[in-house]
Amino acid sequence: MKQHDAMYIDGSWRPAEGGGTIEVVNPADEQVIAVVPAGSAQDVDAAVRAARAALPGWAATPPGERADRLAALRDQLAARAGEVAATVTAELGSPLAFSTAVHAGVPVAVCGSYAELARTYSFEETLGNSTVLHEPLGVVGAITPWNYPLHQIVAKVAPALAAGCTVVLKPAEDTPLVAQLFAECVDAAGIPAGVFNLVTGLGPVAGQALAEHDGVDLVSFTGSTAVGRRIGALAGGAVKRVALELGGKSANVILPGADLPKAVAVGVANVMANSGQTCSAWTRMLVHRDHYAEAVELATAAAAKYVPGEKTGPLVNAAQRDRVRGYVAQGIAEGARVVAGGPEAAVPGTGYYVAPTVFADVTPEMTIAQEEIFGPVLSILKYEDEDDAARIANDTIYGLAGAVWAGDEATAVAFARRLHTGQVDINGGRFNPLAPFGGYKQSGVGRELGPHGLTEYLQTKSLQF
Ligand code: NAP
Ligand code: MG
Image (cartoon, rainbow, N blue to C red; front, side):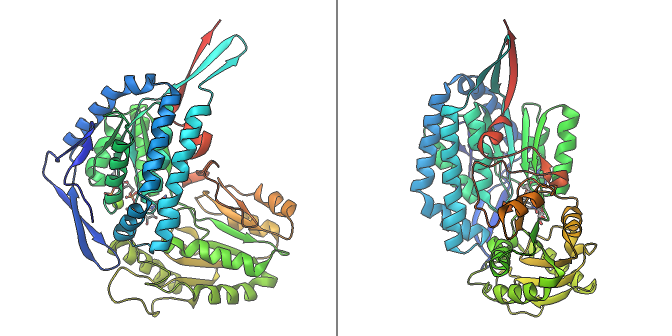
C-alpha cells in the first residue's frame, strides 16, 4: 500500500515535528499495512498558518477558476478510482465491489457537483436597495471519520474550496491512507499551495488542536455525538462557526399497502451495507402488527445473504467490534429475539467481524432501539397505527435520515412530513448527491452536499445603495 511518512502542508510533503506515528491496520486480516505520521499541535499550527497565508489569494480567485481546479480534482479522483477503492478496502475492510461503487464513486460525483456549483452559484444577490455578497468564511478545520472516509473528506473540502475557503484536514486515524491519496490528487489538480493541507494524527491531539486553533474560522466535524458536543462547546466559547454531522438511529417505516418484500429487502441491505457503519442507516424497521410476522420472516431470509467475509466486511477495528458485540448482548439481555446472526453465528476467525444480526420483538425503550450501534444490526419494531408509528419513529435523540414505504406516494409523503429528520427516502428513492444531508435534533448542526452544503462555507455582507 502506497504511503507517505509525511504530511501535506503548504503544497509539499513534510515530516511530523514530533516524530510520532500511527499504525494502519487492515481490519480483515489484522495486519499492519502502513505507518503514517501522528501530527502534533505544532504541525496543526504550521498547517493553519499555511491555510491563512493562502486564503486571500484563493478567496480572490474568480469562481470560474476555482471551478476549473475542482473539475481537475474530480478528474484526478476519477482517474485514480481503482486505487481509491483498493485503499479503502485495505484500511476500512469493505468489500471491493462496495468500495468501487460507493467509496470511490460517490466522491467523484460530489466533487463534480461542486465544480459545477462554483461556476453557476450566485455569489451576489440584490435585495431592495442592497447588494448582498456571499463571501468565503475563511480557514476551515475539517475533522472526518473512517466510515465513508473519502466521501466525508470531499463533502467538506469541495464546497469549502468552491466557496473560496482554505482547509486543514484531520482525517480519522483508522483511514489516513485515502486522505493521503486525496492530497496527491489535490496537488495534481493544480490547486495552489496552502489551499488544502493534511495533518494526520490522533483526535484528542491533532483534532483537538485544530478545533481550538484561533486561526480557524469554521470547524466542520463528522463523527460521534460525544466528540461533536465537545467541538460545539469549544467553537461556541471562541465564537467561531461550527458544522456537526453526528449519529443517527433512523426509522424505516413500512405502512400497510407497501410492497413488503421490497421494503424489507431494501431495508436490510441499507443496514448491512458497509457493515452497518453508516450514520444514516435505517437501523429501526417499523412494521404494522398485521404484517409483522411476515416482515420478520422476510428479514431473516434477506440477512442470510450477507455472509461475513464475502458480502459483508469486518468492523473497522477491534474496539468497534467489541462495542457492537456489547449491543448484541444487551439486546438479548433486554428481551429482544435474535432471528438472524447473533453471538453464536459463524464469522471468520481472523478480522474484526460481527455476524449480520436481526432482532425481532424490539420495543421502543430498549437500548438497541435508542442508541447508535454502528454495526450490522437491525431492530424490527411493531406499531399499531400511523400515530403510533410516527411516535416511535420520532422517539430518539437523533433525526438524520429515514424511509417511508406506502401503497401510494401521497400517503408516504404525508407520513414523511410528520418525521423529525433531515432526509426521508420515499418508496426506495435514490441517493441524491445534491440533496441537503444533515440532522434534526442531536444528529447535528448544518447541512452538507449541494447548494445547501456550499452556503455553510459562506458569510454575507450587504452593501446599501
Ligand atoms: P470519533 O471519535 O467521533 O471520530 C471522528 C473524528 O474525530 C476522528 O477524526 C477522530 O480522530 C476525531 N476526534 C476524536 N476525538 C477528538 C477530539 N477530542 N477533538 C477533536 N477531534 C477528535 O468517532 P469514533 O471513535 O471513530 O467512532 C465512535 C462512534 O462514533 C461510532 O461507534 C459511531 O457511533 C459514531 N460515528 C459516527 C459517524 C458519523 O458518520 N456520524 C462516523 C464515525 C463514527 P481519531 O480517528 O483519532 O479518533
Ligand atoms: Mg475516536
